[in-house]
Amino acid sequence: MVLSLPIRLGSSALGVGRATVRLRERSMGFRPAMAAINPSSSGENTGRGALIVLEGLDRSGKSSQCAQLASYLESQGVAVEAWRFPDRTTAMGRMISSYLSCQTDLDAAAIHLLFSANRWEKCSLMESKLKAGTTLVIDRYSYSGVAFSVAKGLDLDWCKGPEAGLPAPDLVFYLDISAEVLFTNKPLEMTCMNFALLWEIATN
Image 1 (tube, rainbow, N blue to C red):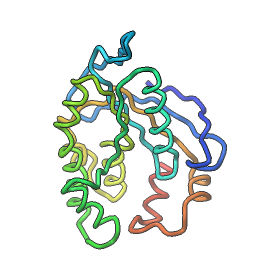
Image 2 (image 1 turned 90 degrees about the vertical axis):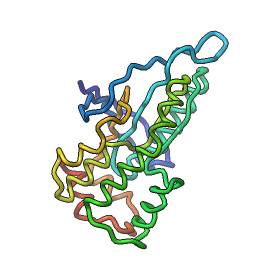
Image 3 (image 1 turned 45 degrees about the horizontal axis):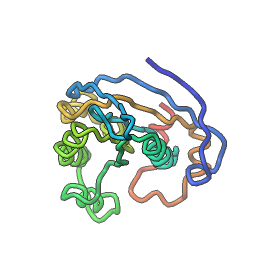
């Protein structure tokens, strides 16, 4: 199922007009889970929290929309936390940070597994938060990791394999933005990310 609707992005995101949000159902071998965001009259959650994921290219507005969504849910009495992957505060996250800042050179398969391990590092905490009734709004999840690695030439099924068993998102939003707008607003310095790779992901 795909639902498309225009949303207004603030200046902190793109500084331009609109992007498209798509709600997509994806099969990644996740562990299925049902969620309920049920704030009670006292403002406390009465059910399991929801796992909400926002995906999209860099500078598509994910961080801004995550923050706004989390703020809105909190205003409605929902216990909510905003997360992002990679989480650079963990052991795996620090290795990823070194790679992204060009301090470490890793094989494409190795870095893919490292990004996946970063999500698994947070799996237990994620599940405990959800069971306790806290909704998680996450900036990037498994979809980004698979898409980037496949664009580097790795096999799709192989890339999906390490994600099997992670908690299933209850809702996935994909912020779609044209390649032209993306590169108009992207800074010239792109750290280790190959420009041609980013273009391939943007246009396919």
